[in-house]
Length: 254
Image 1 (cartoon, rainbow, N blue to C red):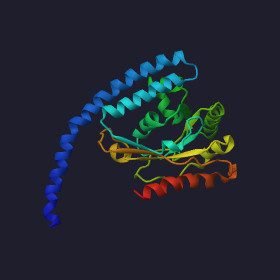
Image 2: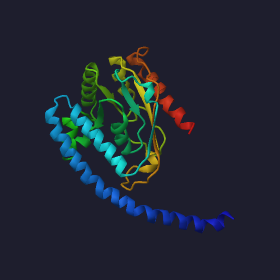
Image 3: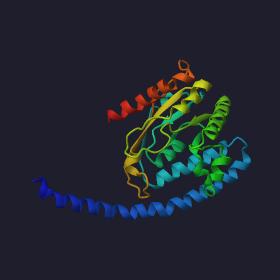
Image 4: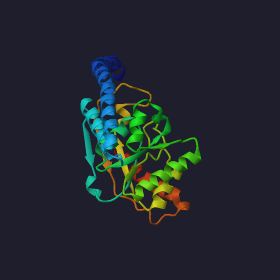
C-alpha cells in the first residue's frame, strides 16, 4: 500500500514546491532592496549616536520588517526570566542565517553581536555593522579572536549585553554542535551570566547554502541565566557543557 502511495506523495511534493516558488522569488526580490534601504537608514542614524544604540535599533527594525515581510510566525517564550536592567551574554544555537534576524528582532535589550569577520567585508552591511558597534571575529587567528573577546569584555563593563553563537558556525544537520570553549572565557572573566537561547524552526525554514525560504513556524526560548561565579578559566569546558546541556535537553524534548 505504501508503494502505491508513493506517486501521490511525489505529486503532492511537486505541487507544494510549485506553489512555494512564487513566494520564494517574491521574498528574494524584496529582501535585498529592503536590506539596502535599512542599511542606509542605519548608517545615517549612526552619526547621531556615538555608542551605536540608534543604529542597532534600526537593525532591529530591519530584522522585524524582514521577518514580517516573509510572513514568518515567531513564538517567544521565557522573556520573563530576564531582568531588563541586567547585562547578559546571550548564547543561541545556530542553524541558519535567520537566527541572526531573530536575535536582532527579539532579544529584549540593546546588545552587540560577535560576527565572523568575513561579513564585515560585504559592502554597506559591513559598514553598518561597524558603525553600530558589532564585533568582528577572525575565527582563524587566535590573537585577533582574543582581541575581539577583549572588545566584548569592555562592552560588558559598560553594561552592554553581548550575543555570540557558541557553536562558532551553522550546524550542517540541525543538531547542536560542540561549543567553542574559548568563548566561555568571556563570561568567566567578566562575571556576566550566560543566557541559553533555543532557536527552533530556522534549519527547516532556510537551510545552509540555500536562498529559498520555507515558511514554517519559528520559536525563540530564553532559559534561566547561568551565573559564571562558580567557574574559573580552567573550568570553561564545564561551563560550556552546562549551557549546551540546557539547549540539547530542550531540543530532545521536542
